[in-house]
Image (tube, rainbow, N blue to C red; front, side, top):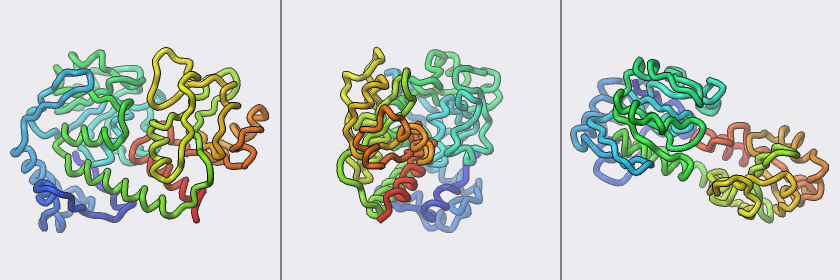
Length: 341
């Protein structure tokens, strides 16, 4: 099963991007340009032909897992099972043949790409495992996250008895870097690279459409009094995306972090530390503008923050917690709407 290219067509209207290198040229040959697969009709013969070309040239291949082990993938996967709902979004971004996937803790897929996964078998919610369901999916490649609530890394040995199993660490890299890794594992390097290239171009175009306010911006996951309120570090996926759009992101002191293990993406700060933020603009994670106004901006304890005083409080988007290509695109669109020239 190969997913359609509906997102690509909707967002960019690009049927085939030419990238450097022999494989890229082969992937965009005249026959492909005219083939129905690029238009989203899913011509299996054309797709199989492309896959066979790559498969014959470079299979089997060895994948270096995030846990330091390696996995031999004997042939190009045609039926992928992603046990991590977070990783699934990136696989879908470059039309990898995802047949089955784990879901979020509520048993649902992430809203930003749920429509793209209408034909993907829902294996289990994060925090549980259903080995029988995985067998039934008949995968030829299983993808596991090294960490996170949707990780089943402690069961890799059992999963390897079903199909070759690879382990990736989405927590330590951007979705673009993860896409590159997964492209190598699936034999879809060109597709993954083209997806990243398209997105980077989209961000560059968006940056030219906005007026970035003076001063710094911060990103807060606002939970209110008595709770940790994670603040995005400058190295987080959300901050890097805003940086690409032209913002300068306030990096919170790591001394505020309350958890035993340091993180590259967020500082889990006590509520009281929010009063020490200095940026002139605040983006609130997992909220739209209305939610940001009702929560963070309405908190009387935070009334003297520069961003509140300047009335520059914005939602980063209801799906901004997990940054994949789909949610990142939503973030970019919201930023353009809020800061359009």
